[in-house]
Image (cartoon, rainbow, N blue to C red; front, top):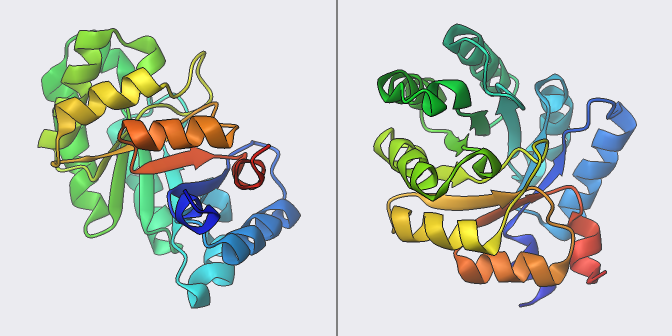
Length: 217
């Protein structure tokens, strides 16, 4: 896979709580140079990133309910609407895992449908945090995301005890078919692993190690 092709799969990400404006500017400059698919930042940095990237037509992504997913739905709605108003066109929302583990599937589905409505025409990715789920739960979570009309199901926040795996991507791809795309995230640090995830069915990769991956180190 060429470097340009690989870059087109990557959401160039900086979600550390101590990320500075200077680091966000560097992140955006790297995205412009390498032509990454998207830049993903916390909500407080969306305006800055959008101001830099707008003329280059590189989307700005942000996160909602991150990293726990346990915010009340009204908070998630406000957070998403604000991010979109500030210039984000791709939104990664963490599913409410407590509701899901409690088998409150109607509540999960209702929130996901609300997220879809608020996102409008913008790209909606739902993070299901696979490290907390067994095989059956991963399939059920993928179905909920698909039925809610999400554009992507995403494996991980990168803040949990586990991240993306080739096995999980393959499982989600099998469950999703062509109805929903797969974003792998969490612990993607090498080009070999990135390409393996793509081969397994990942349509996007979320990583803060983008530059090292393109260098093959």
